[in-house]
Image (tube, rainbow, N blue to C red; front, side, top):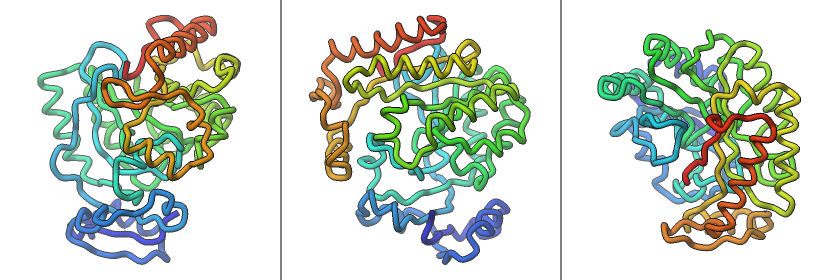
Length: 330
């Protein structure tokens, strides 16, 4: 997976660093002062991640937690996301990270106690706030290496009025299974119908593997959610989402979900440019996109509303309640 490791000098004796380095005994380790002296200093093609991906072990400085935009999460409480890593081991063709950072190299931040300290400060003003992991990197894909899940579970166990969401496409649930499920910790899986997933969700676990992981976590008592985002409105997308809901219902995964978000595919101009460069044959290029007033590239508003409402109604017909469903980033 990785060709070399960059390690910040201040973390040389960090116990989690020792654990991570043991997993890659043959990789060269470069000790540096600060990760951003090297990471992203020069433009590195996104697809170079397939053959030359570096891992940075670092401390996040500056703002560790950010207020999420409107319609980011479910409910009326304040939503925040915290930054535990930059970049992802997966390669979804629509991923905004390919146009967001100048490098695909992955940074894992290890100063989780500082993140928790910021959470404590926020909760003094917003005791029912939500905190989301997975905005800039998958929250579970490397959790067996990074080892922070127990730290956050302990914190949210002592703050039952607050909520934690772990957003993922991974089936790496080993670290989760070692923890006590909490009703205020939600594991949310991003799902696409098999037809779309096989074409654009590169290097991710299959839909069937994700559903199996969800079923296992559900049987253990973990609270689950689903993100149907981004929806790519291919021909006959309705039948593909009907099939997805049928599979979810067959595994008894719908009724006890905390929520289901529904959102359509959207891009900035920079990301769309990278998608064209990196995936010239993608099914994304057959879509009827235009540049909207917010400068995002997405479906025209009437068609976008049709797509969202179609999937919403399919969810209701599958047995979801209206209070479980919301439109993401709309």
